[in-house]
Length: 265
Image (cartoon, rainbow, N blue to C red; front, side):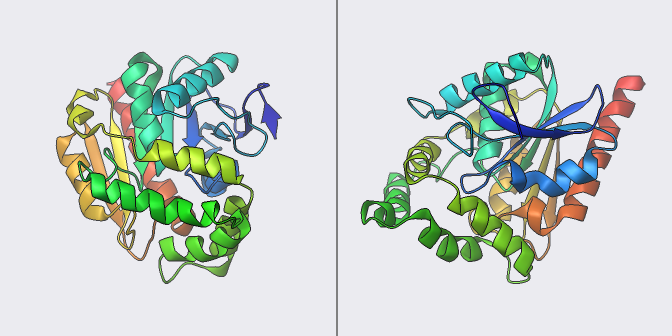
């Protein structure tokens, strides 16, 4: 694992084209292992640990704007001027937020099992979500206990034992404080009406069995985009890129190859 001093990360591949992988709340850089290994023949793949995860230093205050600033500093430290952002769940939200702050630094957006507005305008839903997710922490439960219950609940019924165990281990490594801070940040996201402003190619990938970011939610996102593609993978839950790695990689490769060809013509 490498580090900029503030952010730890893993990278593989040598190319002028870079993909930055942004994981979800219960993940880390290993959440994109199938993509790091599967796409690095053609692209430089960098999978970061969000602030507060693994060896990355936490933020004083978690907000999508502050996470975007941290991501921009990360790119500056790596001398990266323009990248493809691939984000899953809250990582997809961060990818969108980053675009609105730094549009010239984004070549494309690959948004996996995510949303453009958490819970819409339903404040009751947000309140209930916070209570449900944070009550175990306030009662003194550790992430190890939460992970064993939570991870299987967001995966498809056909998820392999290997995927389940890998996801559980990743979530167990998240500190209770970071988890609380990021959950509270998560519910503030509201960019649905800004989707038409995105001027770069977007690839949306959902899982047909995902109850956290349902297919219909991502379809609505797709309909608001000017330059978008949408794919819904069958028998797949919330951890789309881990549960259906080959399908995800094939979609991403075709999407990025299409962008290359359009630039060449």
